[in-house]
Length: 274
Length: 320
Image (cartoon, rainbow over all chains, first blue to last red; front, side, top):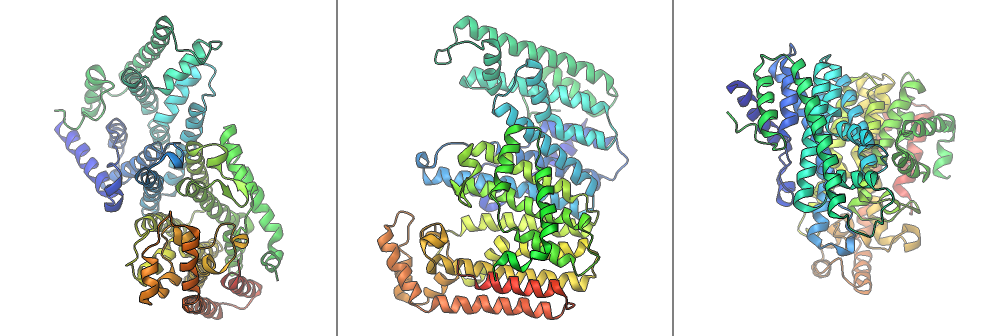
């Protein structure tokens, strides 16, 4: 347990060092490192017969892509004339920071001459953006399409890697585990701010003929929240089922099990945990 | 002679590349497909594919291999344009609405990332590690160059070396990489692809310096934007740096703000135009062009060599 914690912390340091750009940091927040995804990547690569150096580079390149995509997700639609100079500069640098992190991923893998992994990760970026557009444009007609789309956005990178390194059992687990996390995050976001893309889509699917200019009634709101809870419960069940199929004796698997049981929806608590 | 006439013998291959780009952008997502093709159909000079094809003529030219590099480079360029329009908040490009104005910033971000991913997928069909090392280094340099450009806006105390480094990253490295990667895809020896890289680098530098001169000398109609737009946005280019050697002009330049009335900006432009800085900057551009021509002299004499010479002359000396 101690070793995997140490490695996770080391990987985080490595990602922070790689993404460190003094000028960007003057204006932008430090890139968010998704520890759930980091832990999953480490779990997959720990099962392979590769050197720690090679493992670290593969993990680092996948995490750079995740960071690049997450960074671009922060670009807003606010019109320029509404923006102060600072907001505009922040947006410009957010776009460029994402491009810079993408460039780092390509360079890292090109330097170690792993052309096939460059392709695998590029395919994941393509798939993620195709699904992000679907979600953003709300062009979804079924709840199952919504959860499929969310699962693809959250887990394509890891699923493609698991496929490429012939570790299929991690595909199913990553998909349901990361979907579960996202659903819980979205529900929390809605409860805190009243805003969530998932809530919007479920609202549209649940009450297609409602007058959009009117607020939901309390019963309607409760109905939509129940739908989210139903999706969460399904994803939780799928996650536990998939976890059972993973080797139960590994440090990381035990860690995942305790994390799922106790801390779902509270990402970034892994490194500090014992 | 018009630019496109210079490489008309490549038309069949360029059409193939155009079709390949269109096929590459056939996303399952309707919006992504529309947004990507919207930009593709707006056209462009396709100068990067032209450089790729011409450089490949120095080796074993197989269009089925070379087209991968050409498509990848043009798509990388396209992806960066989609994001640049978000950065610059531009509504028009090549006379057509930008992705960000026809849809919005978010769609533009997804489209740019999608096109970038597709370009890398195509590029991975080229199984030459050196090509990937060069391209990835180039992409990173372009990104760093754009970040530097924002950092250096309105930094009137920057020196000429800073300017050269910025335009190298902003423009020259991608043209240089186009030449070098075309040659590598065609299996040429390192002495030749390095010469082609240097040719592309020097042409790229001359091209950007000419572009920076035109910001002062071309008309609004020719530029498609008001003269001095770069200066108004705080981009300190070679003509400005040279003109600022005159303390009186320096004083005027230090007053430049984005909100400066056009009348006042026109006075600064007039002062820069009358300072001899334009002629001096042109001489620098000419120097880079001559370096590019010198590289060509060290390469086999063939039709591609002659065409590269003509294109370099054209883009270095263009009036708008």
